[in-house]
Length: 334
Image (cartoon, rainbow, N blue to C red):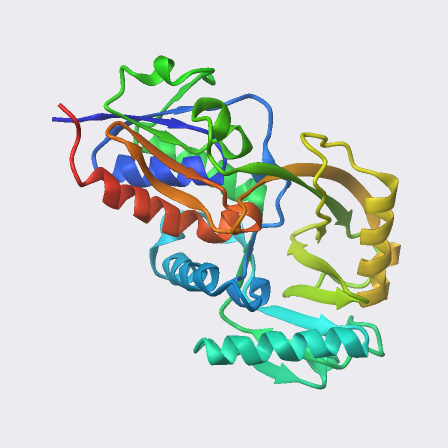
């Protein structure tokens, strides 16, 4: 017998859950909006090492498990072009930034996940500004083209028979399904009040390579710039730069100050980016929780949840899909 699964949310988490469930024989439909969400804006980094920080041991643990799944299985059947980088370089601009980098490296080593330290970061990435020396190399991390991945997961879902449905305003609209998974990010509390999820705004820029400019970096470059963080993620036609972080409710309008800070920091790290075209400014709403850990599991007999991934949605998509798949094997209510 084929059971019916309703997945609410069509971002990277919802699509990953839907694909995994369809592979397991579930009849799946995805309720999604026509408006792009946070997954459309994201940088697409698969980076548990370079995202890590003391106090986030559990997030590192599940992030490393999900990175393994990315390498082992998650990319199977998806186009090779989805992956845009296979290494991360984390660098520091000033002495205080270098001290933070050392703290991060020591903590990763203590957790059993060491990364390679260097005092010659420009040997790894010649496009870096001349004064940048200190860095950490995470050679198993990845980056994906977020929009290409969403398209590839959509195609994979359709090939498995997943159906598309309009968004819902109440769980009553999915009660014809045997099980419902809430994977709609910051909107999950509207369907299940009390979920510890809040929107955190993040601004992201897209810089497009122009003829005569220096080439696009081949790896992810993350930097600490006078206490601020910036990331540069390769794309076939340029670089994604992100990301600010604001508690501004549901405001998704890019601000002058946010765009200026990202451009200033990006060009301080890689001066050649100043010649690129500023092709797009955008902002999305990360679903954050009070402890920075995702909420993935069972809410009641017929309802599961997969939200609260914060800045780690792309990284944790495989782990989330496997966790939900395990819950679905427990049994379907009569």
